Length: 252
Image 1: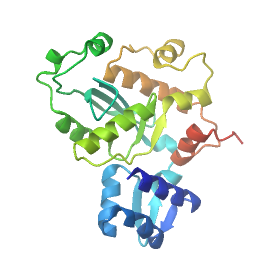
Image 2: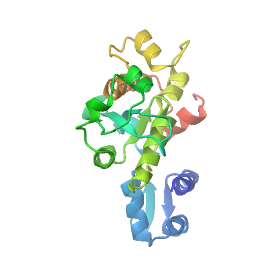
Image 3: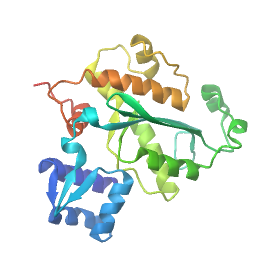
């Protein structure tokens, strides 16, 4: 699926955010579904695509990023490999127009927590005994995430771990666009270090960062608002913001 997302995005960007039915059909055929089912699968995964008549548009291509929904996420896990370990806590903040419009927070049932994880997070197996299952929480989180832009500090870890966890549970994959707040910080502010704790301190974000999912997501959300206020004025759309973060588009 990730290859299909990338190929579609490349087609959209080459054609200024809109592709004809023939182009979509050619790319979507790789999903081995009929074209209508392929569209539904993409939309269900969080990929921001919409059909208008015989054309398809990438909704993030022209949408003003200031009106975008950003889902700022942090997870705690009992290990680094999603095929062997699992999410034990997830926290997320939904931001739009600089305001918190929704929140998501939950522990996740898990029978095995290594001692070093407990030392870092304070989470042990007893605290997770009566928590909801991984399937239940990730299904609810999929609905919460919707098609918002996925944001995290060191986003590849959270995104890839959750994406693989979804796949392992038969919940599909994540098609949402993503932004790394570390990379965005490097392009918009100067700092000696870009770890969350350090940025929290020097920017006076005022939240505790102690390796708990919700508090770290809240800190990252506050950081994101500051970073967005420093994005160059020539960056207008969500797609431009994503490319600016990844490719360091120069200020005009």
